[in-house]
Length: 259
Image (cartoon, rainbow, N blue to C red; front, side, top):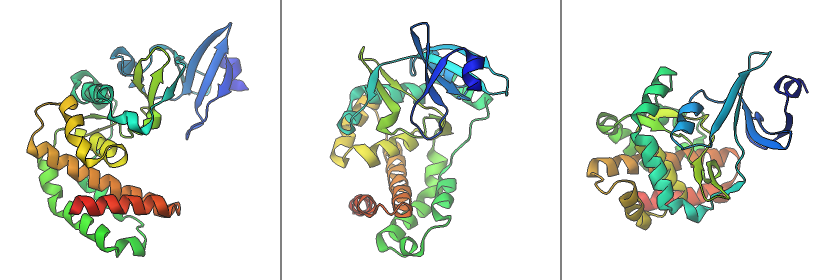
């Protein structure tokens, strides 16, 4: 393989959506190698949010190869997303001015409520477009979009806080990894994903007390907005994949929120 020859490492592909990640082995040393990872990685490494960055190298075809320390460990289980450690790391990300400045310099994408509404409507199937609960949810989101935007704060957001992007090492160090979806958005965007997929409504208050003991009503409304928006997007994706059980579970959550 050309990449192995240029890097000098024996590469073993690691499963993932991009096919760009590898376990690299050389002289009994093991590293996590990735092609064209975000330049944002260096700042995350310095903050201790992601595993330590060891080196970066530009290879012959113009790609950039990054090497991080290899961490034996596992992804978080669904129930562990309620952990105070998850809240602490997300708070650290959202409040970091240095991360925000760097992502701005790198031209990080800004996500606003209106763009999410447009994404949802794009190529939406007619049966979802006419579904009573989904129509009602979309109407509420549309009616409150300007208020949510006007009250928003813009911070660094991970953009995909799936449990599969949380790595708990054998040394009990928790990392948030895979930052290819990093964006500039309201921190309620990340929290909305977390709550809609992993944390029950009655547990929100306890988790938020760990994230920030002084959550305002304005912030709570923004979180509710992004929870509902995430659920709509999840319904659309599940419908596209014909995962109807998963789709119906999200619709039930939407119905409960609307009540």
